[in-house]
Length: 168
Image (cartoon, rainbow, N blue to C red; front, side, top):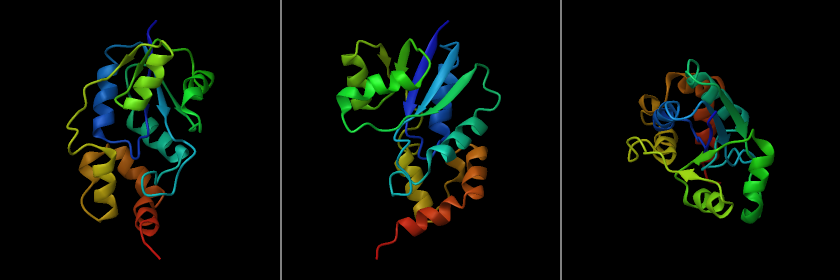
């Protein structure tokens, strides 16, 4: 059985993430989705809580043809210890899938195979680009699965984002 670990912040979970996961579902038998920076929320780069991101992802992946596990991963203040921390928090895995240069380096140094899946429409489908649209009241809904739109509405996410982006 092949079990992969896909690590990202998912702030928010968008159509690019969904496309990557759909592709990974063709390569692995089970997928662990590690929500990075799970301990950070309510700031400009991390507006959503880990629990909110779990909701976004699990709802958006309803119907995925392989089993998946969504696991929040807190940051560790010492990068050299982060891989051991991740391994203690998730089921065993064979390969890590990420495009984050630091995550790639840390897992490679630990001797764990790392693959960078192709990114889907990266210019328009980055968390930064989607958040920017959300902060500025621009249309963002087309860039995320409909389930994410629903979660953001439930949690009043746009209002939160606009409030925390104000300066005093």
